[in-house]
Length: 274
Image 1 (spheres, rainbow, N blue to C red):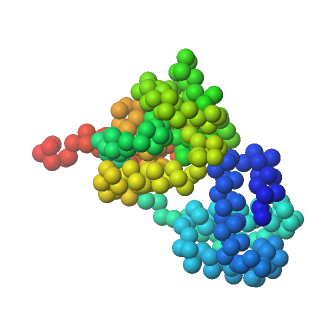
Image 2: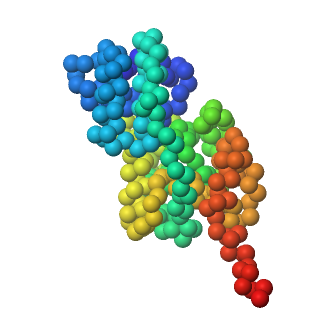
Image 3: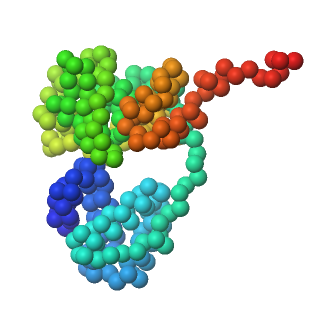
């Protein structure tokens, strides 16, 4: 139903992850309103009503709600020339809560308890390079240069390319993975040969944390947080971490100064001065 819209997004150079998310949410919304109603035929009043209903019925999280509104707004504008105002449905920014950070021992436990070599290679690559899930999914074999010890991340968030160092331990693991799975284009491919899906990747992480008995409230993105935090705690300069993560501003990277405790442990209590 949304094939032409999907093609348009590809032409406009949206990332495969964004395209998959937008089309998936549109399809879910279309299924919700029923097969005898088409999204673009709903008048403004009924459209807003149905959006409210699906957000409440499906308990959409902040990010999912924003993505649904963005997908609908883009679809109606590009495919039907219709401007829409969803300002009354835009969620307010959630309260800033410091994320739970995985300790080095916990990351090691997660990786050690993951016996499937493909799953282990995916999770290890995210942690070793500090990748977003979409960046891992889009990673192609040609982007890995073992002779120059670099990994090329193409058109990441913010349409920025970046070059990352290729750790020797990661090379060894990926060589073993490649021998058993022999991917053709993407480093990690799904059953049909295309890129691995975001949903399957999240499921892999969830199963891994369960096996490792991790009780913290963590997501796949926590591996990227752990990468940055562990670098900071080991003394890596914040601006270097900014470049590795691909952040546009140092302000975003400075989040990690609030979640690392190594520097706090060095502070002496005034009690020691008495």
